[in-house]
Length: 147
Ligand code: HEC
Image (cartoon, rainbow, N blue to C red; front, side, top):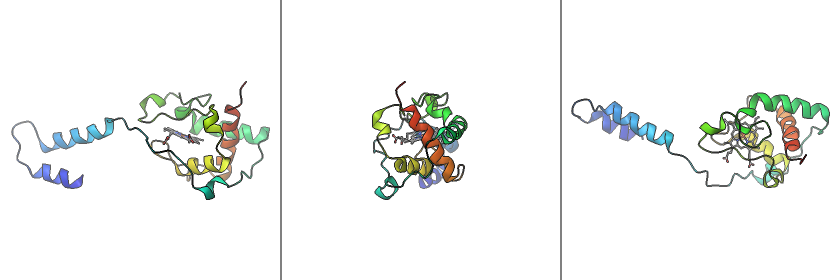
């Protein structure tokens, strides 16, 4: 990419078309090409088997809900259906947390995904403590329960 930009900058171009415009267009093109996340997002086996050390009781679920509202709601939506206010702007749609397909994975698997992130899903390694990540999982589990 850098090489292309350098080559473009060295080119002599007529009139109003500057190398900058072209470089800008290329960048825009990349930014707006809808990405299809083709690869499954699978946690490593070691991570999958990690046990949730925080009991899923009223206190931890309430703590998890507060964390979810601040950090996850925007993309994942109130009920975890992936329809948060920011979801329409994302190149990849957030998963539906109410689905069995999602809920059947282990807490360890979710923990790893929340820790690592995968674009556009951010990593929460720094923004949330381990305990907070386990608490939010306890809350996310309640979204899969049919009411
Ligand atoms: C910027 C938007 C955004 C935010 C904020 C966000 N997520 Fe995500 N999340 C996504 C997207 C998009 C995906 C799907 C990523 C993929 O498929 O590669 C995803 C995927 C996930 C997955 C894996 C889904 C699966 O099928 O296994 C989990 C678990 C998850 N998010 C939990 C959370 C939690 C918990 C929070 C808050 C602490 C959060 N996310 C915050 C956008 C977001």
